[in-house]
Amino acid sequence: MRIIGQRVQVRTPEQNDDYDLFEIYSNQKVGNLAGWKAHQNIQITRNVLMGFIFNNETFVIELLETKKVIGTISLYKDTFRYKVSAADIGFSLNQRYVGYGFMHEALMLILDYAFKNLKFDVVGCSHIIGNERSKNTILSAGFVFEGLVRKYRRLYDGSIIDAAIYSITSEEFNNLKGSK
Ligand SMILES: CC(C)(COP(=O)(O)OP(=O)(O)OC[C@H]1O[C@@H](n2cnc3c(N)ncnc32)[C@H](O)[C@@H]1OP(=O)(O)O)[C@@H](O)C(=O)NCCC(=O)NCCS
Image (cartoon, rainbow, N blue to C red; front, side, top):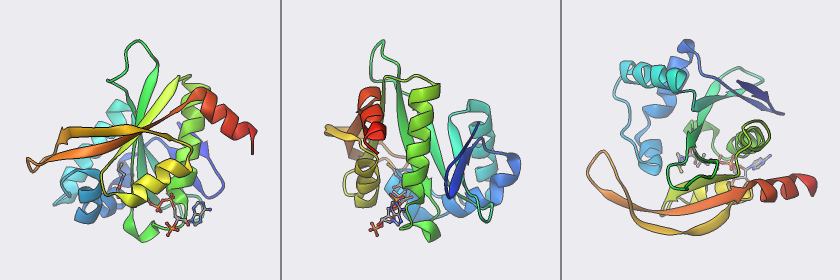
């Protein structure tokens, strides 16, 4: 899969993305915001990358200008809704590239793919309470706040987090695109 935008492309990961992905996943600040443990060595990243390639749910965000992989974006099958074609999005960005709108661009590309190509009815997204940057990114893509889920998930360190959850329907996304 490959979707080309103005400044980034979202594509299927490859084995030689390992160093760029390690740069993202070895940062505990990113891990704390997203809810996972920072990778201690590149072998962990390589194992995770094999999973990405096998599962076909996580894609990399590559800068068109430099070809550097600066983030990941995942389109997971939703396990919450029943008999509705639904997906859930997760994302992470290399901290050196925060503040330039790259995730916003990648999110719009993957939403277009999710609704137009994969025909999802609705796409969800969530963030740990307090992750304001993620909240802004989610809202800027047109997601609608659904509510707060208490004790949403137990993390690797045993702590349990509350989360804010959002969704965007195919109709909302099409209206948004039509209005631009
Ligand atoms: C969440 C995360 C991806 C947000 O990164 P980000 O760069 O702020 O995201 P966006 O792509 O939405 O960019 C918005 C920022 O770029 C700026 N920007 C610059 N050019 C822009 C453009 N063309 N379009 C949109 N925004 C632009 C915006 O003003 C905003 O910056 P500001 O908040 O300082 O004003 C990043 O902080 C991250 O990886 N966090 C750790 C992992 C994580 O939280 N994952 C989410 C788990 S749910």
